[in-house]
Image (cartoon, rainbow, N blue to C red; front, side, top):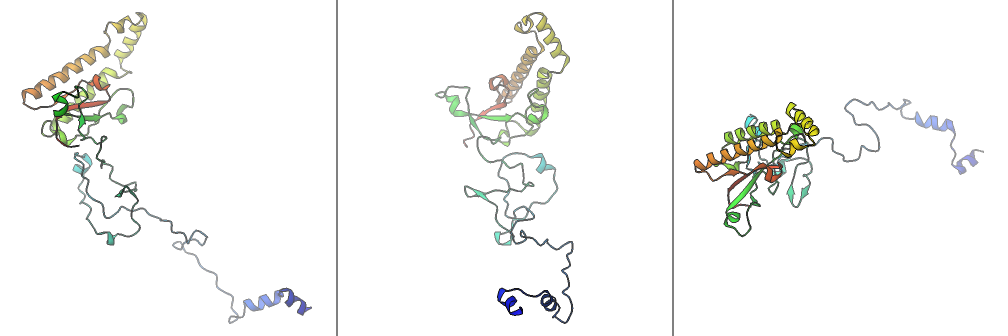
Length: 264
């Protein structure tokens, strides 16, 4: 019978028990797992990263903007270390230019292009064959939708240094604050004047709106007059810069007309 078991490859349970206790007659000690030890599973051998760190070969931003974040911080700059000193894999690239995929990346860096706040756009308010089209450029300050969303227009308080010295940083802040305050007063739908104009327009068959007696119409005229006064003041100072009428851009951007900086 034992011979048949050996032929069939069957081993007696008693033999298994004896073989497990052959090493000095002591059972094998179980493996003790600690809090720092990695779990024993099929995924342990995988090379999945557990931490995403900032690359050590970062270069300082070449943007021409004044960032309040960089002005207020007292942290020392990140030292430039060679690539051999960095650990881990290199960051992925797009078109040969490395970029940082970490959530702690510097969000004040802007890629140079038409979306850059300092990019000089062609002047669309004059004929392409005119001298003004070749000698002037447009600097656009974008809308800031984080303030009020789509309720009323507000412009970003982000100073493009390409305006210097035509418009200083302090003058830009005052200009943006004044325009934003006037825009809120004109277009805020929850103010009392907006409700009164809506009621009067409904009672008069919107004749009140057609006659231009609403607060929005009068507020737009006052804002346009104020911008024209700002332009005249800059002209008296001998600075070749002016702000375009906001209605020409559909209130989507605050546009400065400046001499061509000869850069694109």
